[in-house]
Image (cartoon, rainbow, N blue to C red; front, side, top):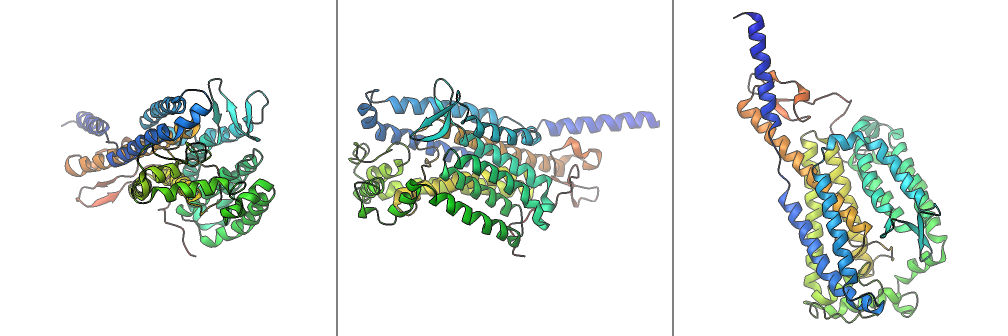
Length: 443
């Protein structure tokens, strides 16, 4: 056979095989999706139960907060659907613009026309139909940027102390803007997410000690700089010392939890939500769940969050094992965000943490929180889709396609493929100076 003819047939076969791989689609993780739906459904029920008395007291109709929650939940589902269909490689390429957007959003609340002050805090921008808390977007955008940074500068983060200076500096800048609003709870959450993702990126623990020694006193000074924060820090230690003033919220929450006992007083039967428990449909909705559904309801909520966060971490580990580092770090970041925020919200309701003003993800009534938590779930679903697609491509390569005829950029990055001898050979795709990730190392 002539060489030109042979080369033509060879190239045609390569195109056909690459096309076959391109036809392979992934599947979204059903456990993750089902858990998120269960939490959102429970949230709908509890918002309806906890907000009726509040809405009637405000004379806006008994189902005002429920209808508002439904509208934002539908918007969140639409955003999650759009993100779940977006290729992560496009998201990764836009990480620098997303970081810039973080700062622009936090600065926007100080613009006189856009910024809105509620209860002395300037945390919202006016969108016309509703106020929007910009930090909720910042949480997700920061996770995406950190994931991209850990992929691009993996070796420096692991081996050199200056490799973590930039992400810590970025987080510090965001914290300063949040404290100016003020929003101490979100500032602490941003610090925790940043530190957690850097640790998962394999940073040496000794390199984190110095920044922690600097940051801890600064956050302590910020916490003690406002009298209301000092009262929150002291009142949770003994709320019964002043049950009608500084300890009022926590004492009412504890009464609600105590009334629930094992199986609760029944759905809709809460007494504390009738003007006794402040923010019963938002920050303290967990106390209403405990009163109406009892200890069983508490276990249900904690179990669902544990399953959601655990599944996200599992997806992150699978992504890292397949070489999909950006997807893996995005999953880890969302797991940290949802897990830490749920932990703080539950801890505040149980009286083991000071009041921070953080909602219970997917359950508490709220606009921006609901929208962006749904967006985070959409990102996790996209991660699960691309992981499943990569695994299917690997299976196709092992069972029917000669990997030697395909270029690296014709596949999803980093699946292991068989060689002519039938032995697995790692194909890492375009070289970026990455090294395999490890957890925070004690070295």
